[in-house]
Structures are given as C-alpha cells and as structure tokens.
Image (cartoon, rainbow, N blue to C red; front, side):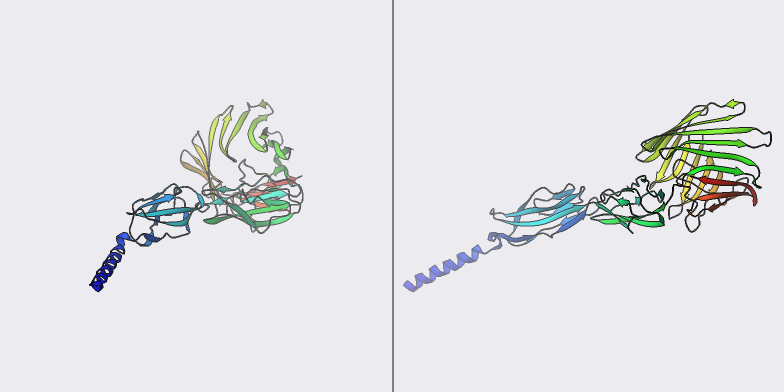
Length: 418
C-alpha cells in the first residue's frame, strides 16, 4: 500500500511539471533586432522586425521615441517608415511582454545620416595677384549638409580653405601658374567634387586702357580708360572719333559704386561736341552673392532678371523683349552667347579657348559685371562673320586683339596694364 501511494505522488509531480513547460507558460527570451542601423534621411525605406525565442509576446514598447518618420507597432514590435530628419547615433530599448506580464528587453542602435552632398560649384576661373587679398571663393551646394571640405593639391602659399564651410580665402604670397584644385565636400553619406582653377600673378595687372585703331594702326577709333578706387574700377571713360579728321566725336562715361566690394550701382552718360545726354543709373540687387535683378532709371528705363544654374549665369532678360542666354563647356568655360529679341535669335557668339583657357581672363577685369568675358570666334548668324584673335603677354593677359570681319582686318585693340 505504501508503495502505491508513493507511485501516485510521483506521477502527479510529473504531470504538473509537464504542464508548466507548455509555450503559453514559458516567457519570451533572447529578443533581438538588427543592429547597428544606419539610414539616410528621406531616402531609406525601413522595416525592422524583432526575433526572440521562448514564449509568445503580446505587446511591445520602445524607449526613447524613434526619429520622425519611423513608426513602432506596439502589437508586433515592427519598426517601419522613412526617417525624415538627421539623427545622431542613439540606443533604443524595446521591451516585449507576454500574457503573464513577463518581459524581455533588447537594446539596438539607429543612426540617420543626411543625404549625400549634391552638386558642388565655385567660380571656376580665378586670377589673383601676389600680396593682395583675394575675394572669398564661396561654395554652393545643391542639396545635403556638408560635414567637411578638403582640397587637392594644396593651395598656393597664403591661401587656405575652411574645412567647415569650404570658403577659399587669404592673401597669396607667391606667384603660381594656372592650376586646377579639386575641392571635395563630404558628409556621412558620400561626397562630391568640383575643380577650381587658380592663377596667381606676381605683379599688379589691372587693365588701364584699351586703344582701338583702324586696320593700319594709323587712325585712332576710340580709347577706353579705367580708373580705380580701393583696387576696384570706379570710372570707365570711352572717347570715340569715327570720321577723321573733322569728324563727330563722342564720349561715354560709366561710374561704378560699391558696398563692401560688391557692385551696387552704375551711372552712365554719353556726350558729343554739342553736349551731354541725360544720364541713367543701373541698380543691382543680389540674392546671396549673385546679382538676380537690375533696374535702369533715366532716359530709357528697364528691368532685368538674371537666372543661374549651379552658380553659372544662363539667362539675362529684360522687360523690353530682349534676353541673352549663356551655354557652357563641361569644364565651366563659356561656349555660346546668344542675343534674342522677341523670341527670335538676333546674334550668336561661339567661344573657343587655347591650352591655357585663354581668353577667359582679362587682368582681373571683365567686360561684363557678372564675371563673364566672352571672345567671339565664329558668328555664323550675324550680318558679318566676325573673328576676334587675341595675343597674350607672359602673364597670360591679352595685349592685342585683332578683329576680322569676313576675313578682313577691321580693327586692332591694344591693351595696357598697370
């Protein structure tokens, strides 16, 4: 009898243990998510699912809150969505709970990086003068936030690049032949690059005057003289005499006004031996560092709009029905300039360059206010087919321009510097 009682007790214990080991009574254990997780804002489509062993979880919770754009399903523990903002690496704790209130935890990391930098651009062609501070070269980036900038090869002595904002600045202390410097903008998701061309001359080379002669270089057609203040052009004076020896002489004057090195307005007037015409003033308006509007007041008022792509001027239009468009070679040099009036092309200028990228540079001075100096090489749609041929001095500044019309020399311009 005693043996029978012991047998029954032992059998009851076995049955009880077997019941406690059913999945419903085993707590969830070994909860895990993929980690680490590195996503790109507004780009990565996220779907993370939990894994665990043991029992069944009936609910989940997470701490702290996920980055904006990601959602957490408290029933399944799934994480999904597309992160919207940048988020530094952070640890998140998910807790899984079963029907009996038993829990298991998991810690994992999420990082949300910015999108890779987009199109980078600077002013592509730059000529500086030894021992004179340069106008800051400021980068433009189409999208993304840049963490750091680098440049290769090293800049000429005296110039430096700010590794945080990419600005190239300083005062060059050596002369340097024209060279290409590659700037790279980088963040945690990638990088982008742009080639900046820099030349440093070892003497002051600013335009002083341009004298235009006839084809025999015996008759002076016109003379343009430049005056400076604080190393910026303050006055441009042109005298013309088209009908020697007792011809009809004319003059034209342009006065330039600046604020902090930025051109703000220009006053223009013309005259002849009978007197001067009413003057006009052009006012320039900026968005950032680029001129986006100009307004001309005076005898013939007009409004002009300037359009850019990646920092390059592509169109100038006015409210009189005219506009000028610009097209570029892949290296950034100007390729074609078209004059359009009332939607019809009036003239097109095509530009070619020699091995040194001449004639983009003109002694630090450009004939237009927007750092564009084009040289017509072939003009098939104009009434006359014009070719301009430049000759350069040892510092790569033009010293002579010969203008051919239909293959015949029309004029010769001589450049003088100071």
